[in-house]
Amino acid sequence: MASIATLDALNTAVRRAVDEATITDIHTHLFPPSHGDLLLWGVDELLTYHYLVAELFTVAPADLTYEAFWAMDKIAQADLVWKHLFLEASPLSEARRGVLTVLQRLGLDPADRDLGRIRRWFAQQDEEAYLEKVFDLAGLDYAVMTNNPVKCNEVKHFDAGAPIPARLRTALRIDDVVLNFASCRPIIASQGCAAGDGTIEGAAAALRGWMGGWIDRIDPVYMAASLPCSWAYPVDDAATRMIDHVVCPLAVERGLPVALMIGVNRQVNPALGDAGDAVAPCDVNSIIRLVAAHPDVKFLVTTLSRVDQHALAVAGRKFRNLHLFGCWWFCNNPSIINEMTRQRLELLGTGVTVQHSDARVLDQLIYKWSHTRRIVADVLVDKYADAHHTGWRFTPDEIARDVRQIFGGAFEDFRAR
Ligand code: FIX
Ligand code: ZN
Image (cartoon, rainbow, N blue to C red):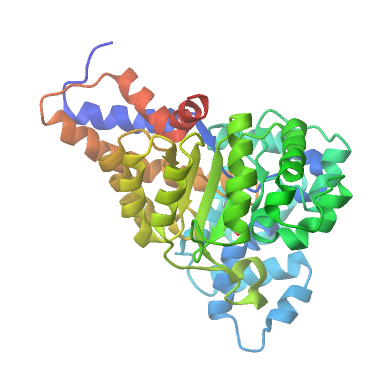
């Protein structure tokens, strides 16, 4: 294939490659249609996304209490969000703009501001066909779910053998077990694991058996935990023991990566529910000590605070068992995605997964990936131009190869290594 001679042609080729790339979404909170009401979709779920609930209470009248809001049904909550965040204030925030992008990409003109019409359109959709449509519009091959073995409302669907479409793969979520083992003991015991009431070291073999049973059952892409900003390693606590004696040995035995999302400052405002978490810098040196202590374990890591990103990207250059992914949650905003993606490409080249969606509502895949594609294209145009200026010339195939790498290819390579 001929190499690209001019900067204009390079710009066009890069944007086309990003537009056409198939993306693997390596972390979401989606579920298959067979898991009933766990799969969220449609305009009312979009409007009541916890990012928007947090925004609502930045402008809502003082007489709207948290309690009154949570006591409302979903439609009334969505009506309030629409009124306060779209009609009475312009939808400039990323989460608000996201709702509009979804409507636009579905062919529903947001300009007429008619929520009733939008609701009627969604009511006519068939869930399974709609899931396919969303994945096609987002340009994804598959998305990785979050599957928690100690949540009864999730477990019951696996017990029932509910089918999972090829668009979704599982991930075994283990933070409850790692961080709150004591409170998980009864449910783990109810699943046949005699983990006793002694130490984690004493229960480690039984716990590895229990988690291994879940791995056999759901065939996860990785095990995953979200860890607080206060997390430190190694320390004399249950989390360190669980990581050292249960999670890491099992990861080696099963050849499964461990995904860690670090930096949440949980429930600073519990009245907001899922929207009540905040962020604080984490200890990147603990991540370094962890990946150094377990060189045979593959770690996928993302951190929540913007200020940790540079140190984490440098750490990513030091350890072949550390793969960076995503602009997580409060980092999933255009200005920060732009900065983080530049920084990562400058320090790590294409050996990184630049984004995941964290979608909780199916339709969000459409906006999260459409917004990300545009930002990543802007960044890549600059990076290819910088290299072009040296006299190096690229082919369209090479650009398509690189783009696929940062949108899932590097993740697959890391898993396979
Ligand atoms: O812990 C996590 O996986 C977080 O991503 C979520 O729980 C969080 O609430 C979220 O939705 C972020 O986007
Ligand atoms: Zn998440």
